[in-house]
Image 1: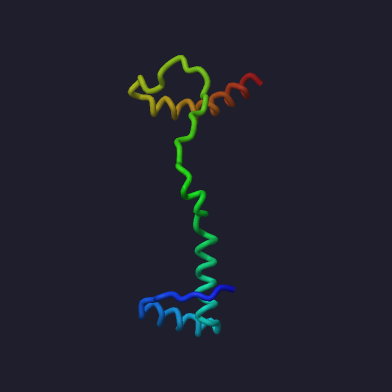
Image 2: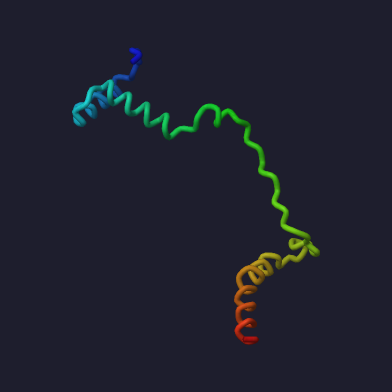
Length: 96
């Protein structure tokens, strides 16, 4: 185990001492637990240093028509995604 010194603001020291006493552990153990927690929830340095790049686009297959050319493209998208499967099911049941 390595021994080290840290400098804390007075208020932080008092609050940490009080918490350690309430938990019946030493201040050193409280600091070790806090540091270990921060290391576990933080991104590793090598992951943080890696430059982020925009993902490659997905191939959505051939499109015959530009979907955004129509000013009602939002409505059309809704009709295609929500109502399309419902109509297909209705037709399947009707053909039956």
